[in-house]
Image 1 (cartoon, rainbow, N blue to C red):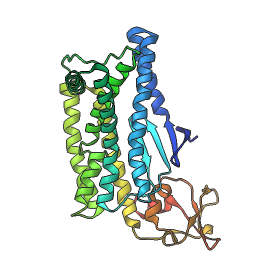
Image 2 (spheres, rainbow, N blue to C red):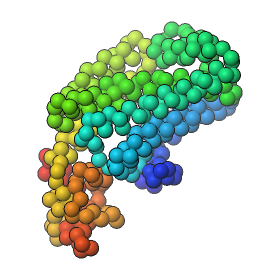
Image 3 (cartoon, rainbow, N blue to C red):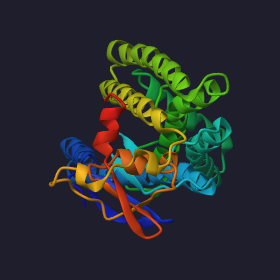
Image 4 (tube, rainbow, N blue to C red):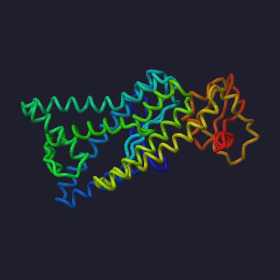
Length: 323
């Protein structure tokens, strides 16, 4: 367990963790449900939030399993109030690979929705009714007008949960495809731009476009639809895009360099420097271990032929990069 998240297990070699903000979100909806109809409301909304995060987990696994096929290590996935965050060992520089890794997340959402759509069609024996219900579910996400929806948030029926998950997975699949960096749509835009620009330039253009689109959507959420939670989510995404851009600007300065190029002699480090239990090899490329190195506060011992030859100090790399 870290200071802010708890380990809940491993899947396909990936550490799964729950961030404390997930419990804040769960608690909020349990409270809302109780205020509405008592403990039954708490139970139904609580179950729905858990099911939604199962969908989030499958979405992130869509990214991660594809990345693993390309040889990219995925140390962990953290589930937070605003969704899931997969920590990949490196960012693919091949635009085609980045596009495939990125698109497989939303495709999982659409696949879940398709399965639920078929199940509901079989249940009701009426494709038209299920199609109309699906459209009405989406309308509830994008308008504050009254729309009759087949989803009953206070029902413990599996059919009601199926309706809720159907609408949520379609909405989230579409929402993730908005070209707002660092969401999936923003990453797809960055990958497309990377075919004509270098990686950092492509990231800057994608981040700038994201801010314009996010600003318009925040204004719409606040002034038109009164979807205040959406506005808050977009603000967090805006901040996340800025942080991602800073991260890309730093790691771009170490592209093509080996661990031996960036290591220092152990005596040059302060005596109180925390040391990682994971050793790096001197011949490894920094590109392949950026997430591990730059997200750590600990220094990494560097080995060559079984001998300690130096130390990689992440804070020093950040300082040299001007951050």
